[in-house]
Image (tube, helix red, strand yellow):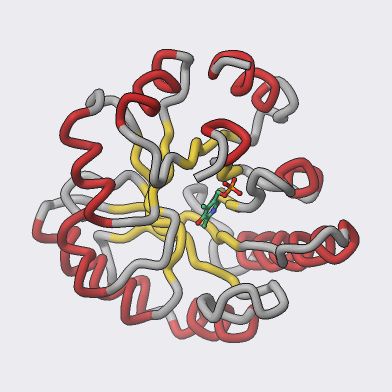
Length: 220
Ligand SMILES: *Cc1c(COP(=O)(O)O)cnc(C)c1O
């Protein structure tokens, strides 16, 4: 299948609320250009140096989403151009995004990473930590970041019930935060969940952004 077909086979199954982030990490700019020509405009990357190089040579209307673990000392390199940061996993990282975004007079949409999987990653807030952080409200003093929702990764397993229950937990948290803390804030609207092997479950469970790499670009 070519890119057009692969992308269509995914996007035709997406409800209106859900957008595709084409995860292009480790794939060269020429391949990204082909996916762009096939209609993709949102690309996900997880390495700072790599996304910097790619954004210099690829079309300017691409929305670059940073989806991986982000080190605080590297925020400055992506702050000038990044469209969304998916994996905010500490209050300290959010502070740094605020600082760097303000230097560029930008407001950067950010998602809080929830740790819902069993052992997959050590990164992310538990739902309790995340609610605590939101209730404390320091983020309200950060005009250059916009908390636009949450992201999570499910356990890498064949057990669909487990994956589903993890996505469900994350989505329940998202809805609770949306209806309480962010009640009057329409920008809190993104629930980033689902990858090549589990995006259909994630969409069932309310995902608004799926992050799909292998199913579009092949193995890395
Ligand atoms: C690599 C990556 C993806 C895409 O994974 P695939 O299995 O290739 O679709 C999605 N989300 C994150 C955070 C990733 O690091």
